[in-house]
Amino acid sequence: MGVGRATARKGVVFAGLLSLFVIASYRFQFDVDPWFRVQEESSSSQNVPSPREVIWDETAPSWPLWKDDNSSSCREYKTRFAKGLPMTYLVSFPGSGNTWIRYLLEAASGVFTGSVYTDVEIKNAGYLGEGDRASSGRTLVQKTHGAALTKVANDLVSRYKFIKAEVPLVLIIRDPARALISYWKFLHGRGKGSHTNQVSEKSYRTNEFRKHVERMVTRWEELVSDRLLWHRAPMYILYYDLVVKNPVYHVREVLKFLRVPIDEGRLACLESHLKGSFKRPEKKESDPFTYNEKKMMSLAVMRISRLLRLRGFPPPPPYPSIANISDKYPH
Image 1 (tube, rainbow, N blue to C red):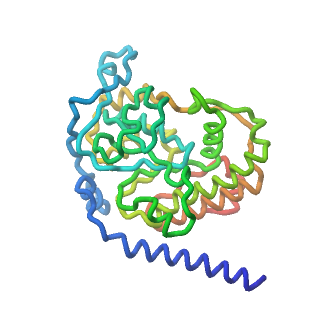
Image 2: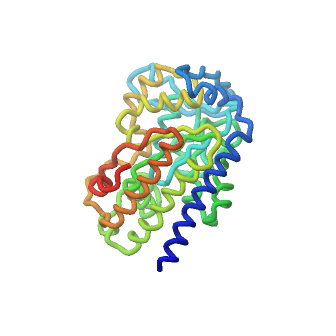
Image 3: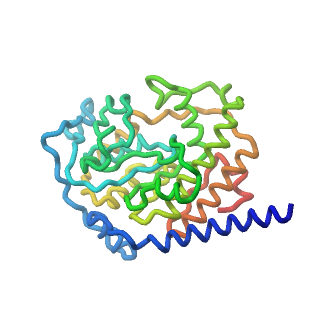
């Protein structure tokens, strides 16, 4: 038994050393897109990268953002396609508010966001970049859930190749407990309105839900850790739970990272139109997780927090959903 534990510990150490080797070997081996180079060069200074002019595709369709607003100034704003933008992934675990973040970015920038998927319900709601080729240069960011929705071999080499480490990204991180519940509601609210539907609390007391939690906590951690360990292009960490508290501030910071001009008039209108089409309304529910499930999530958050600090990013905010457990496993 002692030999088995020693072997397991050696395996963990080897995996950690291999990850550090990958970071050291590849961090400086590709040419950063000129759009982002200023961002990297100024990251250690107080200088904010200057925004770059967005070139619009005048032949492409547009979408009125707030056509029913009583203010004539807000009614005038539209979302449009651009030209020549660098590919930038908007990465998140399912249920982490990706579509709502897309709405905020589109409203603030005036540029459509894209997706590696094609969701007809989303496209019909005005997200015309949905399904547009990720490398088209017409959309600001491109939504992806990475390997969380894909059966990828769980060895390190396969996982490294899958993340496309050379593509800049905005990484959305949400309290895993809330993300797992949101994704569960999406899976069991299929059909029209699946992005905002609620489910019966009885579904949380099933073996299917227990398996969902066990499987998805691992995928939540791997989606974040793989990018923190191996991503070598510019990366912005966006905490969903902080965005909810102050959306306009955090969207402004993302636009700075993307080097997109900031329109104060748009941000003022966004302040009064924060909900968007696909933000699921909050519903007071009983806690569906067991003690061991909370412990599993807390340990995953602890490991991610350590990786974030190693990469020089601020740690995630406290997560009330697992607070009574996470106190025993400090970040």
